[in-house]
Length: 480
Image (cartoon, rainbow, N blue to C red; front, top):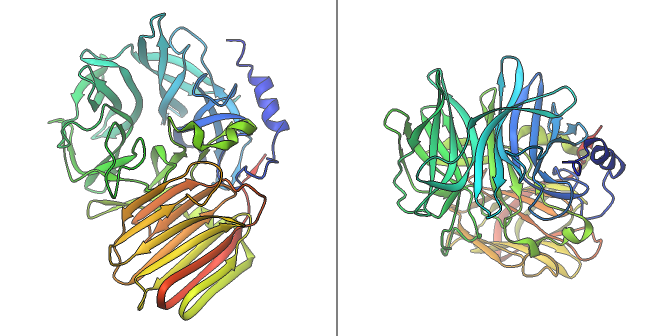
C-alpha cells in the first residue's frame, strides 16, 4: 500500500505542528490533518503511557483506517504523533480497525480487528496480534480468530483483552445474524483462542450492534462498557444517534452471565463515543473519542482538513452501581498558577467573568431561593447554555445559540439537594463538563464563528445563597 508512506506522513505532521488554526485545541489530542476516531491500544509500558488511535491520514472521511501513536509520562508532554500501523495485506486491506494493548514478555503488544471486504462488500473480520517496534511501527503477527463466529455477521470487532484467575480472555462487540447486538468472549487455551460464548445479560433486544466493549473490574464488581447502536431516544437519555454506556454488577465467566443493573450512559454530551479504559497502579483510566459517527455535518473543521479530538484522560470509580468520572489528576499540571481568579459572591443572581483561550473552571453553587440557574459560554453574539432546574432535577445543554457546527439540546437527570458542583474544561472548541463531582459528565464541541475569547455568565431566577469557585488559564499539551 504505497499511499501510506510513513516517512512522508510523519514529516508532514512535524511540519504542521504546532497547530495554527484557532479551532485547533490546546489540551485535547488531535491531528493537524485527517480524521481521527477511536482511542486504541492504551497501555503503560516502560514508564510511559502509550496511546494509539484510529486515523485516516488521507482525508476527513471514514476510510483508510490506520493507527496513530503517541506516548507520554504525564498526559501533558507527548511524543510527536506518528503513523504506527496501516492497511498492508489481504487481511486488513480495508482498514486496521479498533483494538487494545497489553504488555507481554517484555513487549508492548496490540490486538486489533483486520477488516477486508470482497467485491460484493462482504466483510471478513479477523482478530490479530502485533508488536510495537523501536521505530514506532507495529509489526503485524499472528491472526488468532480468522473470521466471524458462526451465527454472527461480519460486524465482529474491537477486541479488549482482560485476565481473570490467571487466564486471558478478550471480549468482542458483535452482531448476530438476526441483527441484534451482543458481546462475545474468547479464551486463550493451549489450542489457541477459543470462542467461549456470548455473555448473557438482562437487556433483551438492545440495539442492532455493540461496539468497543471493555470489561472492567472495580474491586468485587465488574462493569461492561460498550457502545450500542440502534436505541431510541428518550426524554432524559439516549439522545445521540449512538450511545456509549455501561452496565455494572457481577460477571461469571464460568456461567457466561452478567448480573447487572440498568444501562447508564458514560457521558451526556453531543460528542462522545468509543471509550477505552486501561488500568495502571489501581486506576481505571479512560480516554474517549470526541466525535459521533454519521454526524459529519456537525464538524466544520473538516473544511479545514482535520476533524475530531480525543478527550482528556479521566479516572473512573464505581459507587453503588454508578460510574463516576473525573479528570485525571495530571491535568492540574496544565494550570497557569499566576492566572488563577477567585469567583466568590454571596446572595447573588448573576456573575460574569472573562475566560482564557483555554480555561478550567470550578464552581460550587448553593441554590438558596433559586430554582433555576444557567451557565453561559458566550462568544460575542453566540453562546452555549448549560442550565439546571432543581424542581425537575434535570440539566440541559443547549447549542442552538451557535452559528456553526452541531445544534440541538441534550437533557439528563441530575440530582441535587440544593448544592450544585460543576467542573468545566473549555478548550478552543472542545468542552468537557463534570457535574456533582463526576456523577455525570458531558463532552461537546463549539465552533465560534469569530476569534473571540469566551465569557462565562451565570444567571439564576432568584438569589443564590452562595456562589464560589476558581478559574485558571490552562497551558497546552507540548509535543517533541
